[in-house]
Image (cartoon, rainbow, N blue to C red):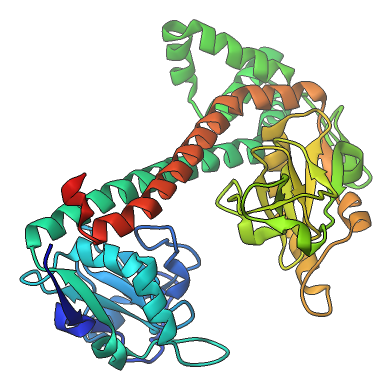
Length: 450
């Protein structure tokens, strides 16, 4: 296998640069992605907490814009982090990042992307950081970043495509999971925050409609279907219609005030401490930590958190506080309120708490804890150095406690959804492990022997 050394700038035909200044933004328009949108495990930029620019700014401020197959490269904050520009480009890049356009006569863009993601090249980039508080990579150093490139373009493309197949499968699973979670969150909010089925009944009865009509209104609120669509459902899927009717019938027909808070009749105000089993973490002694799977799996804090499940890294031979399988793991320090789910029994350190709803309903507990994020955020400015929450304050947070049958109904509706999320996440973890093991072999050219 023949290799040749190039500097990164020799492999490029263009660098998209945002003039090094903050551009004017607006309330809406064309998305402006910043460095926070480039995630370690995401193939494409993640559109979260974004700003926008006007069409005029888009046309006149920037020297150029990313094109499909460009590689977005972060220069400041997390230097060297990269993302792929998708086929449909509808964004521009903020300062502190550039888009690299590969020279296809020398290097396949996907192969270059894989190379830039490799541990070896990431370490080279890290060694070139400047700045003590906020590290950054000088754009002029692209000429000093030297890469060993396989000279055969056919092999390059084979490597790039193989690497991308893994990334794209991970990306698809992630998108499916995000959609499923949005559906679950919307259902929880409708039932247990906005009380849509109950309010639909209350409104129908106050309008002088019959109880049967009120229950039909609740069915509409639960399903999002029109009366005509419900009629069609009763004919095409009678079992599904009957299940929906039973669910709507179960919801109360009245809202009442409890301690100044309006809740469905029969429900009550309660606290985390009353409704959840809470275990506050305690860190074992440092000399008991290991990475060779001796003892019990150990999570110190949110550093091990993933999108929903934590990534195993440490073990301890002297576990102190235990979280049971399917416990909700919540960060209680810096910041407060991030959550994951324990896939197995584990030890938790002082940065975490473990919560289990006393009904043992994982779905209900998960989305209820997610729903009190605004209350948890209040503790993020409390500590002398960073936010924290103690056991007493956590247990005293007020929540609404519905009748047990509604928790079970919610669990029934969401169990398959959350099972799909779990299966996709488990598959993603396996794919990431394969990706990380395979990448060095691909880049060394050993793919030819596989």
